[in-house]
Amino acid sequence: MRMDADEYLEWEVVDEINEKLPLIPSDVNGIYIRRKVFFMGKWIRYGGFYPQTLLRIWRNGKGHIEQRWMDEHIVLSQGSKTIMLDGHIVDDNQKGITFWINKHNSYASREMVDLLNTSYDLLPRDNAVLDSEVLTGKDKRFIKEKIYAKLPVGFRALFYFFIVISCF
Image 1 (cartoon, rainbow, N blue to C red):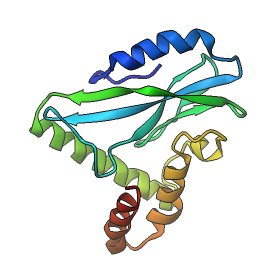
Image 2 (cartoon, rainbow, N blue to C red):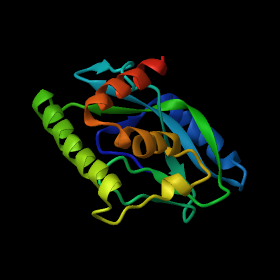
Image 3 (cartoon, rainbow, N blue to C red):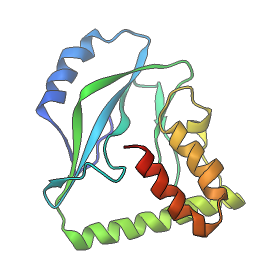
Image 4 (tube, rainbow, N blue to C red):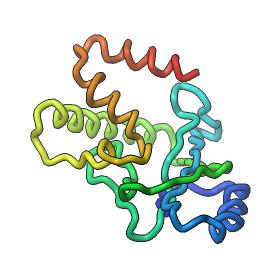
């Protein structure tokens, strides 16, 4: 299982994991859990933050974490089946607004490196998620690398705005 230091499991998903994990068929190699992001004590439900579905539990030896600058995912072995839990992981960073701004500025820099690398192949890239049969961010990565990265810079924000709006 992969969790960040500022994340915790809601009690409902803890009970669900304890209940369902022993009963999962042997052909299921991954478990998706939705993530709630909290900022300054408030749940961010809109703007593309929720629902965010992430593969967070996988069988030993059946998956790996991509090696990327930004937006890495868990990639399962070919032919792997997955299930979705009803509960949530909560991302509740309590370090304040200065930390939040610095963190997102760092994300923006890492995202820029990733986009430049997509366009110019400057560094080796792990594209395992695009080759995966399992939806571990595959559609998001496809849109990001095959459409968004090829748009003129001035149209990217407008494109992103309409993509987020269409999700609601």
